[in-house]
Length: 445
Image (tube, rainbow, N blue to C red):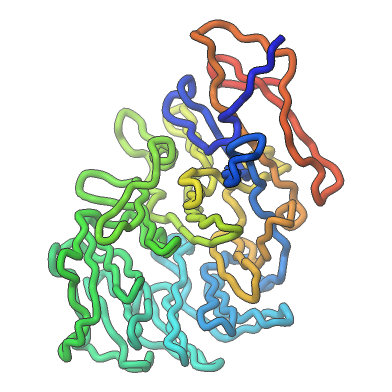
């Protein structure tokens, strides 16, 4: 019997609305191109990094933010406490911060640094940290740094405010600006390339420092996008650009990348279908509030791959409604700028036999280490490709390949050969092969 090469086996996740057309899934693996062009295949599948516990806060709490700005300190935000992780691996408590009340306790804490002091936004409140002295300042929903100023978002008041120059303790009530080209509420701000991006509900603007003595920030000519933001905490910097989940007056749940002062769609129909599954519907009526609003994104670069990671910690694994059960995908969706492909990451709960949201929900890079914070147990981990489990728990890696068809005729295979490195680092490996029934609707050994 002749051998049939499975050229597209090493590929991305793409499981759309019809599994008879496409049912590809890549979980806890990601495609990597063989750039030399001389390998056995054009792509290989690489295992996602594992986790090793560094320390914990001693409290069962979500880690809501990690700050490594300035390259000298690692600040950690828990539920309502600010900590520092020192070089000895010890957690030091710096003071209390406001807990999140708007985002079901899951809201991200943002940090900015002006070279001397830090400004911190948590639970709608603002703080400065100078040395080890934590002090309250004005209310704010987010904070950024730009040209010597701390920039604070007060979304409900439509205001973007400026601190004193290199002074996070001084805020003049008259030093503020609102979005002008449209009156939708501001959702998120992010400083990038010496400019401030102000994302609204349906439109966005880009501001620059004009040096105006009344208020230095003005809109860049043509710096307006007819596209807003669906999730405040989905906006991140990566690969010399910005990424976010978009929203406009016609719909949302599309993931975008900034391309100059325009936006380029990077999600595909399969990713967008997965995002829509998080809001189950019956007869067109939404039965659960949007989980997209609670999306949390973070980014990192490793071995030439720049990853945009977006997770939905508020998404239910299933919802029962009118004698029907609707299942959603708990995976963290990850976009790789090196290949322009998506894959999924999830934590395997061996006790329940189901995937759960990935343990990591925020990231910082310091002392050549990728540090991530846990979604609910107060732990911090080092994330590394040379760790092969999630802090002692097995990582289940799964690949459902593309359909192999022959004009709707039956195909018979005596064997299936996979070329892979096994037992790297662990000494033992469990592997299973399942074949599809009914065009990929179900699988069996």
